[in-house]
Length: 283
Figure (cartoon, rainbow, N blue to C red):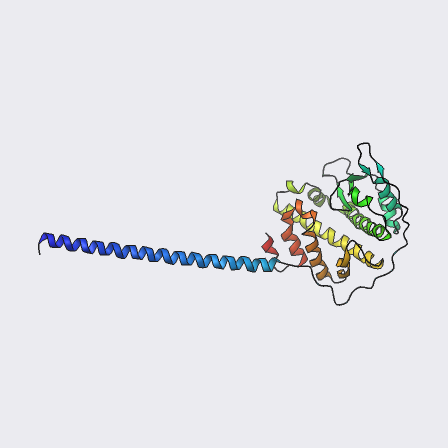
């Protein structure tokens, strides 16, 4: 066989190998593309399942509802709203008027005994009132009752006055909790949420908030039911005698409240405390 024939056969063989090699590469690429597509499909399915798992709607009412009592008598001649020098509506007199008329003596005396209680007016805060405490290291420590003046200004019916009494009762539970809080917890809980970077401290603060709200809402709802119900909280308090249902309802409420805006990292811990079966999905 001549050299030319050998050269021709070598070229044909080389071309054949190149074609086969390219076909193999294309085949591998097609397999990879198919595998990638299947992986994306699985990921989409997993995300859909995860969304379904995390979706924890408001629970249905229990089969047996608590008996509702009779509301306390209410005088609607509340103290008038004044004006601050800067034009802000002064609801302080009305707040303390509502405190002094509170049907529960412990609440009346407890608020008045807090010499370092300061009112903080925050319009459109989304709260009737909110208990807080000045940051750790502030001397002297100051208890803050954060109040939305617009919401207090609008109170004029017996139902709204009773609801405000319930809110003040709720916040009073937080102030009592502050008094008995261990220093190591107080230091963390009283800090700005954005400044807490240690994971253990974040968990400590989030769990303490959950426990405080669960305790305060439990007591508030039990009182609300004794008073015939709450216009502000609606059916929420009808679940208070079934802890698992009540915790689920509380989680749904807190996770959609202004409270979560400053501490979105609390969602998994609140979900865990509420008994959510897929609480880790919130991390």
